[in-house]
Length: 193
Image (cartoon, rainbow, N blue to C red; front, side, top):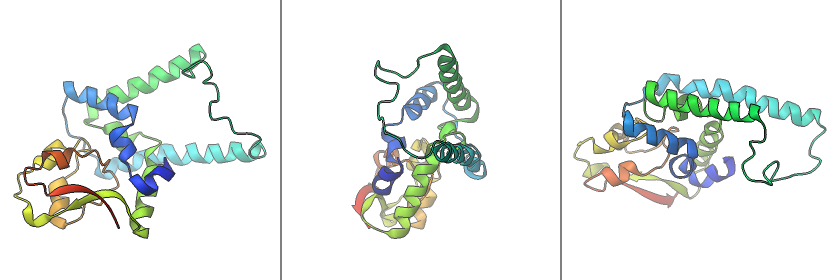
């Protein structure tokens, strides 16, 4: 995900992520904006110990012995024991409860332990300024209708970003809802520096 984000930003979140899809289904029942902002740091409290534990376990095991890309998936989904089902359904419940109580894509804002990989990759590509997928804006065409802000599943203030002339936001998942919603084609995808 980190490597993909170096070229596609957080497009995985907007187009492929099954957790995002589950949250979109919940949005059909309750369409409430997520506060985001100051609380977005919560996911890093989950991510830092998680990554630290992986590194510690890697060192304790003595490094790579072999790489098995299909580890425990030779018979399909890797849920092989009753305890694994409990963990799986607990995560599903957490995602659904957050979507209903905290709003649209709230798990992406507060709980996703994968998004920091992509946020770091996106910030790195923005600093290095090489050709990659991102949103471009022509603020002179904007009529301030706020259609882009209303459609944003991440509850971002897209119109404010348009008026600033930059669509750089680490929480943007490049889903294209703002692109489709804009009646004046102010926002579009581009693969440039």
